[in-house]
Amino acid sequence: MKIISAAQITQAVAELCIRANRELPPDMESAMRLAEKTEPWPIGADTMSVLCRNIDAARENGLPICQDTGCACVFAELGQDVHIEGDFEAAVNAGVSRGYTEGYLRKSMVQDPLRRGNTGDNTPAAITVWLVPGDSLKLTVAPKGFGSENMSRLAMLKPADGVEGVKRFVLETVKLAGPNPCPPIVLGVGIGGTFDKVAYLAKHALLRPIDQPNPDPFYGLLEKELLDEINALGIGPQGFGGKTTALGLNIETMPTHVAGLPVAVNVSCHVTRRASTVL
Image (cartoon, rainbow, N blue to C red; front, side, top):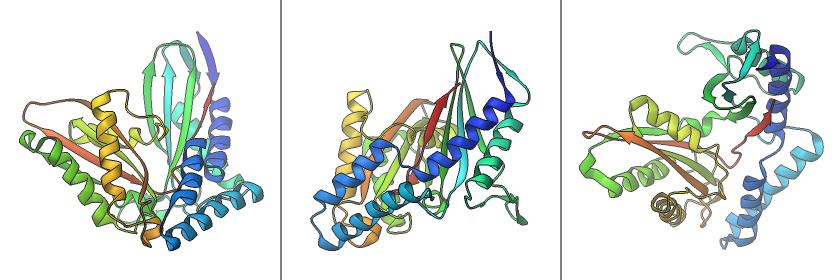
């Protein structure tokens, strides 16, 4: 039995909050720089150049890549042979509070959805925990800005809608979003499950690096087809036109009821952030 203290979790989460907001993961940065070189529309290419210079400036000056430092989405893969010494949720929130305060990150969370009232330290985090075999704890912080989150959608399609119905819904979501989510975007697509599970699938899909296709060839091909069709829409970087509307699209699925075909699209911006560590 491995013992991990609440203090270790707090420190790890604090560091991840700061790192995730200052540096893009390698797959995202590579995709951005490739798009800068290959975007044929001059205004689009110019825009990609500005976005890439912003990545460099954030890293060099220790500043956030985006002013919206997001809701702190924290994912924990908790080994079954781990004992947490202390209150896990309180430890995570203490880490978010410390990271957003010490890292001078914008605090965006409100206490109540209707009565509002800023919490002052970007807590509470949106925490997801999975129990997995082993004696380690993997923590991932994925700050989610709401310019893109607000463009996300969910539909309960009919089974007869099939693959074409799913494709229509994804493309419609991107068209409706237009320039609002700060393209080039990344899309997490969930298919299957239930009303609540399909939204989880879409969010979780954003954790997979965009240079790693779905291991199922059927869904790997569907990811490519959708990405090609989205980039043919011509929305382009920041909505100025071009072929770089989306950098990546990841699909996750799970079994569903015979009478249903739930689909969710979690839209993410060109600053699709995530940082992980293992305790």
